[in-house]
Image (cartoon, rainbow, N blue to C red):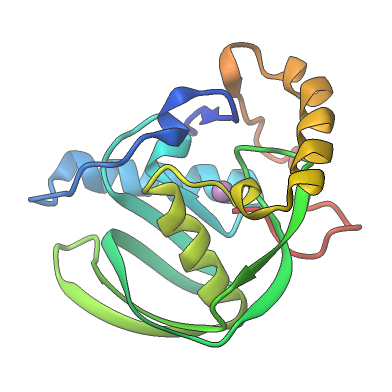
Length: 186
Ligand code: NI
């Protein structure tokens, strides 16, 4: 397995629509394994293919041990509303409150090519919504108010210098979740 470089805000692939997967190949299974490894190295709870520079409709999630590979995921039911803070591995050190559905039902294909359906609430539901957004070129900052987003972008202007070419290289063991922001990055 290998750690993949993470594309950060400014990389065009984060804004592109992904391509539906028609067959789960060994190469995709390797990608999924590498995405898990990269997500864990970054102390994240979710990671979508565009974040590692890939255009397949694939994401991985691990919320408190609930682990899912999501291929071609779709939200088929959504209920309720809940506001909570989010952070994204592709926009490090930027945080914002986002309103999401409280409960979702997601249909997807797993690593073995088998279809499944999962009902989720709370943080898992939020993480699914955040990752599925990534697969359609959407980022959590898109939901912030004009003023909040402008503030976040001003902060990012200074932070982005750390990521030449809009690439974030992870160093194993060096990425801790920020104690001031209890929700993990995704
Ligand atoms: Ni994200």
